[in-house]
Length: 544
RNA sequence: UGCUCAAUGGUGUAAUGGUAGCACUACAGAUUCUGGUUCUGUCUGUCUGGGUUCGAGUCCUGGUUGAGCAACCA
Image 1 (cartoon, rainbow, N blue to C red):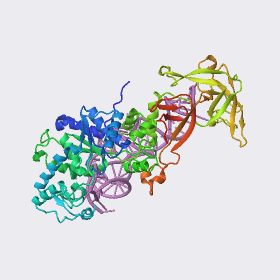
Image 2 (cartoon, rainbow, N blue to C red):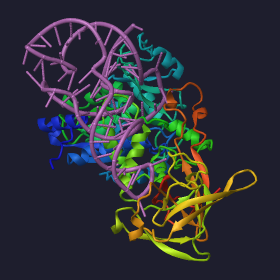
Image 3 (cartoon, chains in turn cyan, brown):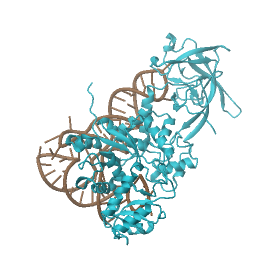
Image 4 (cartoon, protein in one colour):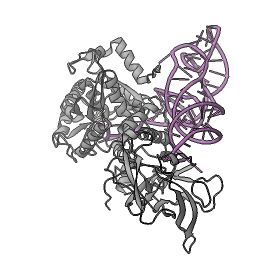
């Protein structure tokens, strides 16, 4: 069969063009730059697959870099979980870097900017600075400190770093253009003072910390990143990214990179991931966790990597999903159904099936001898005997799903009904319902049926066709279990687009807890599809 | 009413000036020891006006619509 060539996404096209033109001497280096202030979610995974995927495909390297420039929000605890999640997804990074590794170099660079008259210390309040920034349609106005003498800027900035200036009292700003139509050029803040929180790695060594715009591009540059791939909202930052790098590369090269004056990293942007019936905002997720609206970051309803893992998603399925949705510059919304389709596809051929009854009603097989039991053998996965079999105890009294019996059924219903069609008990005998018993309220308590002793699965007599096959569990050998059936977290397609409090949009039925009977025990963390009901994943022992 | 980016079936994505294709969803039929799976089929698309060209989803131009940008966040 001829293999259909998969078309390249636009980033891959750029990379191949760069490769063909010998840009950066044909070197490919990417980075995944999470901020260690929360858990990785499926939106990050899209970026991870891009960053690591490009490096893998073009024989380059992808490094992990923690963007830890804001000690107020960041913590080491997140570093570990981020590393764990990336490893679980199956990606291998080259080096682990931290933006904080470059604090000294960035500081030196800031000093250079000051000496070149490209930066100044502003001592206005945040409000004043914001006010002077102008609006997208009106130019900003210059700060009264904009033309401070270089020596004074130098002295003040050094004083800021020595901890002599109170947090919030001064910032270092790039002196660019207060009237630029790109707001990011209106003298962006390069450094702010943070003394209230120690940094998770550098402790109290620094009292000034670089802003994203002054740290990210430089970090890329110091590391030798060639393709700095990020999401679309950074598109307007790109000119500033380029501006800062221009100041010390090319004709202004001052030896800060082993790759020489011609090397430069280039930022490229792709569309971020949105999925229906969920949210992709760290802030909102944190709120759900903190307020106990979900059971934690790894609640199976959460779009976090650890949540998906507990939900039973495999790394391969998640990566396949990313392949399917692709990378463009169109901001859209992916149907949650596609994600679910991908995991079903993945588990279909690999995950052993099990019988479990969630809404049990007793079935008595009236012509099966009292006290008799037998052991039947079922394939773990139908049609794949090589993937193993399991034993199921069979007897006169079974649990079946309440919904599999209807006292009065029309022709459309082809499961159990008195005098109705023959029905196959999964991997077992063929039965026919004869009647039922009800309590005082009219609820069915027992279903009666007769079985055909010659119809056992796998035997000659069992080859007869039935329209329906139902699940069952033998009453005496069944184990009790708790099943938590999860549905979409939100009741509306796009919670972020709705007015009002997003918490009011949660799906009240996103978690249904059922006590079940189940035949076997399964190790935690294994996907465990229950025929007819759906895919389940055995979880850690429940604790309340 | 500034700057940047985008616009292909319901959704996502391909076609790189030369037959608008694929996947998901929905629906229909067949198959089936899960009303699952599988298979087959159907529905539905180039935002809009002009231009360039033998030929435009693709290039140019005007418009429309949507998104992002005014944190001492990243």
